[in-house]
Image (tube, rainbow, N blue to C red; front, side, top):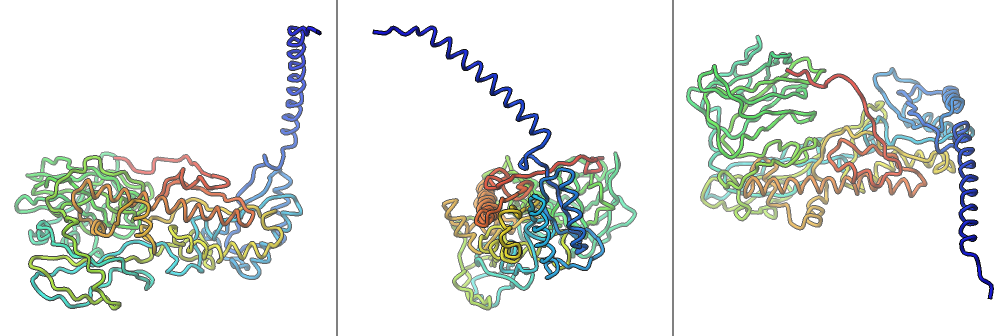
Length: 550
């Protein structure tokens, strides 16, 4: 029997391993140095390539691409933008533009460069003239009538505010009007004043958003305000501020006083960027009573020239703070209120809500035997937000597609990306290897055709009898309504991630493309929305403070 010297074998193995490691390290060092001297295509930087408002020539395309190749770029992302540049001779998506884009792909292929293209004109977000109102981003819209029973109600319900002549009903509900809704501030004849030279008269209390004053921009230690004075203390649980045209991002406080001299802070507020000028501030379950009410602004966006203010309305009704964001109207990020209570005073109870949806006909006419009491008949539907892509050349400007609908994104893809892919032919998925959804800047949406069914499937209950929350009413109690609104935002985020960003990535993969996505600062969960992306992108900037702080 042969006895093997195990110790010798181990020493030999260790020596071999050391020599192998030294050799690999030297090989790695050579590869690393070579990679720095001549980077592989996968490591080369790429650039944005802006095609500005039809100012395109084949000579310019070749010159740009050859310059990119010469300085070591690996490719570029084509973005068709406007930005106020005078229009050129090649309108977006014209036959000439399509031929030039095909030529760009051929030239990039000749030079060994990669191309990606923004999925629409502009850089936000997915819009174009091919998107119909049916496929546009949608939001909840409401109208209501008051009726006192017992009586037979037989009339057409007013259609809620509508955009682009597109409206679809969701439901018709009836509930007893909370007692607090009978109190109207206008019955108490408040006197309005302001810190500016322009005094408001009745502009802030006439119920007309078209009449407004302009407060100066607040400066350091010099806030600006508008004030309402009552003959006796007026109790309120809600403050509604209606901005005028160009209402900026701003912040400040709600102040009250008993004598008009000594003021105390009731609530602070910050209003972000939003297409909605009605801003609601809840003061909580317990009403605040005071003779003097002041809306004081202490900061405004650095770009603001003034603060246009149209209305200040105080109400004793119970409300939900920052409803525009919590219900998904504005698209702003928001947390649920931490102090939402369980009070039932001034609320609507789900068990008392009557579903009248089946009783309304195609023309909006309702026949209903109204029980005794004061009732609100609420008609709820949805309509387009009307938002468009930007900054797009006129020929590429159109409605943003519905972010919660795969069918709407399919129609948008067919309107632009599919045509581009057909034009470049065999270079699709090769030289043209990606499509981009850039930064999200098109606001909120909170409904789509199948939203009710999607909500019930994902959250486990029917949202129908919570719909009065969209009118700033509290259903059951504040805590329950806050949880419903969280479920709304959770469902919106899920549909954004699956039907917009996720489906976009699916379409890209089906056509051999990478999906490049900037999934941040939108009405969704960024990590969830970016999970499907082939290339997750972002941006950063440095600059002055956005607000003028007092």
